[in-house]
Length: 326
Image (cartoon, rainbow, N blue to C red; front, side, top):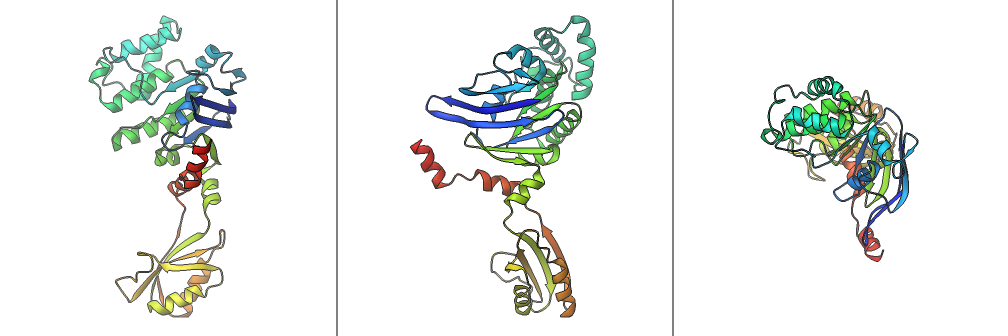
């Protein structure tokens, strides 16, 4: 549905995008991640026709987004980070206004309004001025304007920014519902939103794509070692020595705080690291049983998406030196 080819954008001497390429198949929910200033919003503005690229091209459903901009915009619903609302209009008047801009026949306005009011949960505020609404309801109105023309593609830029936890859950549920019907790009730096809603994750940093895959694939690629946290009732020194001698154990450390011993010396709590894909759980269980110790806890620590994100977007000194030279 969307194909981005070698997209580059310069703002004067600043290179916001650097040869970015990716595709989004029909019906996919793509999480577009990156730290502030990484180039996410610039990419979305180019895809939606708000600005041209310096180089490269965007194809949306076989249409060139630059040469056939109007046709492409008809296929896209866009919620920018700053929701485009007229605060002196009430919700119904605003939705009617957007439909007129979209060229939707007046005979269809009432039906489409009812659909948006139901889908976005606007029933309690339809006659209120937008300026009187909470941040959460304004976001819902913004979503309604993005969807009122029933686009094939939805692009949502930071849709939950500034919302309270209850509002975030409501918007997240709405995004999941929409993802069953639309091709959807969720542009954000809020990682729980991506894990909850997206089937695929694309991470951009300093204008370049640094990762592309499912959350499971990204975790597997970024994980240097598997980690097991174990708590064993037994002599702390003997337990540690035995764990260090387990075939496949690369590192053993106290789980509480580096090498600080746990407060309760009758139990030992360690993190055992091993090579990726090396499962030591059965071996450790057998070890504890044979020593007549008691296994109180054993869990595999999953690599968090936050850890992957930080690893891939870390601004190293080498990066800064490279940027200053270019």
